[in-house]
Length: 332
Image (cartoon, rainbow, N blue to C red; front, side):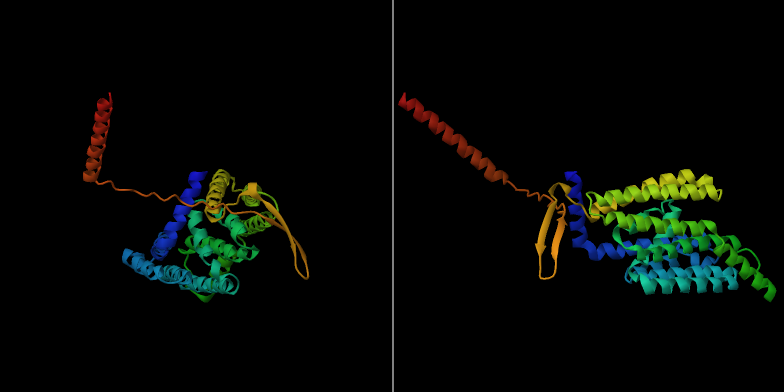
């Protein structure tokens, strides 16, 4: 445990020292992943899928706010969709504008969640998001979570309907529009996923705010259990039982990742809890104070020994020993 705490402090020290380098590099890598994922999922326009375009957009995102990455990702997606269907592109623009304004209105600082959820879905661990948001945020984070889930399922639906002709006549266009909207609004898996993730966020949030020891650990465990039970019921009810094993394994891995994040974010020493009482002019306070665990990383000082001085010192020591022996013999 002590080694992990020392490692944590070393990582924090490295980030504080090289944060101005780590942040743009991290944004660049994230942008490359996001744009590559869009190209692999919706890569209808070969021109937009070129590595030069991906690297150029990623370089721009490295030195701009995360909101620019979201806008460029949306623009790249719409460019691919427009290549196969103008009607579908217009529908996508309307949906993304609604989601974007929701993010700006409520949770602009959590907009990265919209990007994280589709990526984590590909890795089969989207359950990281609701448990983590319950620990670090408030129930208002349900908004970016829902937007991220909608974006992921929207991409899946677009990939399904992109090959269907949509612009032969006005009637065909209206039918196409109705068909796509029915697929979005009638998607039970999308709806249940948002509901379950929202429940996990709320319950995790409520438990971690309780005045009990190890509240954060209990919150992670409870969130994972509720996630498994809820998805188990839903998967069986909508007949997608083939995903159950993947869901359970993904939830276990997700809860482990959240625990690691929580360890580096906040570590409390429950063996030194103090209950403090004090008052002011209006109130009398009962406060439970739990100290944080802070370990200073050990500093290693290396002393250089001059070989010449060392040899001179050794010769001097040998001379003293000989003189001492000589004086003993004279005494005898």
